[in-house]
Length: 193
Image (cartoon, rainbow, N blue to C red; front, side, top):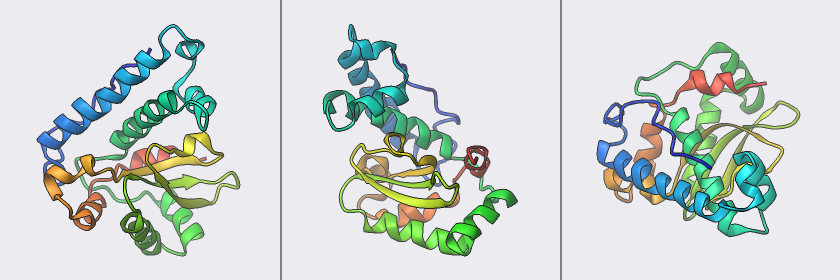
């Protein structure tokens, strides 16, 4: 069975980006709800013995009642790890990979931002590593996740309204803009192959 992971920072530590109230709802209610639903759906089933990734891979496309909370649990836990209370510089090794795949760090930022602003409805924007080790940007709707594909997630931004509405109302663009100052680039870099 799964449990709600603790935030890797104090819920008040990112107040310039997201308020404690947002974290109380987003982490303490939304994410906690996905974990509770997942546990209820897999209890006394063979899925209860599987890893989260195996559950996501095995239920995608055929068991949405399990896939959705499993994927959302993964996506949210991953998102928390992508955030930092302090502005970080992008490590040189990641800068080189971004430049190789997107021509420059600025071009990566532009494409990621444009993709985030173009997403209609709820979903996630990802920086992923492709099987050939190039980097790409993936837009997923609802609970979709790169875990169910051959792409390795490196960074994500939650674009469900519950992620930003308390602090930004309908100003998704300002939320995305402020995200860039709160990324845990050391975590992202640690995931590179």
